[in-house]
Length: 68
Image 1: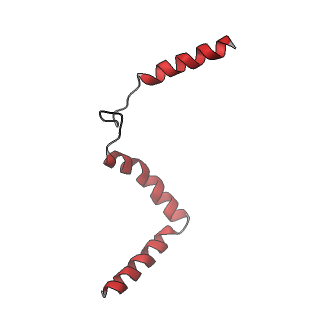
Image 2: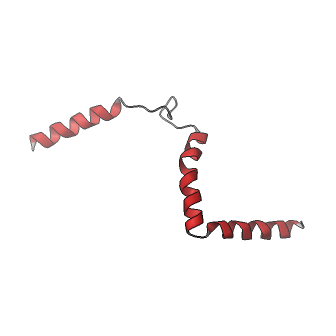
Image 3: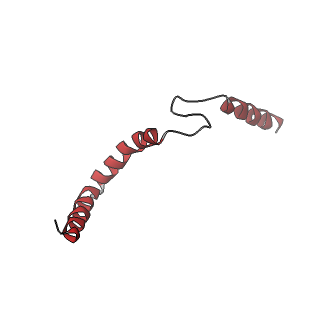
C-alpha cells in the first residue's frame, strides 16, 4: 500500500514540471493551436459520417433564405 502512495506522489511531481510548446502563459493553448489540433479529426469524422452533405444542404438552405 505504501508503494502505491509513493508512486502516485512521484507521478504528480513529474506531471507538474512538464510544459509543451503549445501552451502559453497560464497553461492555456492559443485558440489557433486548438483548431489545428481538432480540425483533422473533424474533417475525418465529417467524411466518414456524411457530414459534408449536411453542411452543403444547410448552406444552400441559408442561401435560399437570404435570397441568393
